[in-house]
Amino acid sequence: MKIKKSYIAVLFLLFLVQSSGMYGADNRELKRHKSHQKIYAAAKKHERQWFQKHRVGIRVTVLPAKHRVVRVKGAKYFYHDGVYYKRSKNSYVVVRAPVGIRLSILPRGFISFYVGPRRYFYVNETYYIYDTKRKDYVVVDEPEIEEGEVEIIEEELEPVDDIFVYPSNGQTDEQTDKDRYECHRWAVEQTGFDPSLPNQNPDDRANYIRALTACLEGRGYTVR
Image (cartoon, rainbow, N blue to C red; front, side):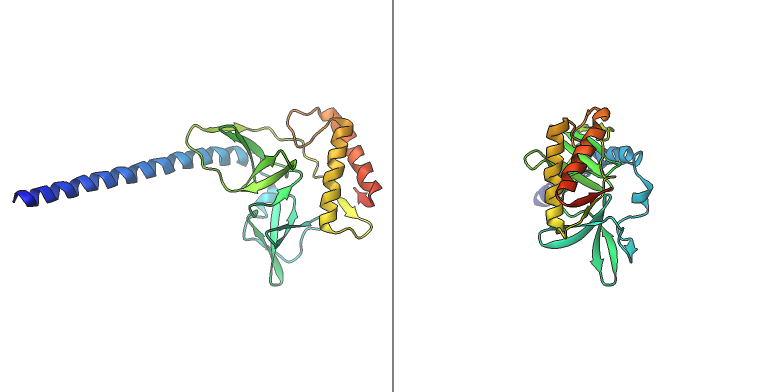
C-alpha cells in the first residue's frame, strides 16, 4: 500500500512539474503575442491601400510596370513598392518577403521599433534591419520579443521611392541596382541629406533628388 501511495505521489509531482512548464510556455507565448500585437496595431495606422490589395496569396497576370527583379539564394523574385511576387505558371503570386533580400530604400508606410538596442523596421508583414556596413535594409525573421521590450517609433523616414529609374543602354537589373546605390551615396555626400536616416531636414530633399538624378542620368539612365 505504501509503495502504491508513493507511486501516486511521484506521478502527482510529475504532473505538477509538467503543468508548470506548460503554463510557463503558454505565459511566455502570451507575452510575445501581446508585444507583436502592439507592433501590428501601430503599423495598421500607416498601412496603405496598395498593401491591402496585394496580400500574400493574391495572383496577378501582369506585374506592375515599375517592378524590378531581386534575387536571393538563387531564387528570382519581382519587387514593386513593398510587394514581392514570384512566377507561378501563367501568373504571378504575391509572396512573403524572402529573408535576405536587400533594399536601398524602405517602402512607404513603415514604422520602426526597438527591441533592446536593435532597431527594426516593419511594413507589409515584413521585418527589416539596417545594415550599417552595406548601407541598406535587409529582410530578417520575426524577432523574438518579450512583453515590455518593444519601443515603437511611429516616425517614417523620408522615402524617395517615387523616383523611377529606366536603363537607357541595356543595363542589367544587377547593374541598375549597383549604379543606383552608388549614386545614392554620392548624392548623400554632396547634399548631406540621407533618406535612410531619421531626423533629416526635409528642405534638403529636393537637392538630394537633383543630385541623384544627375548622377543616374550621367550613367545612362532615364529618371522620372
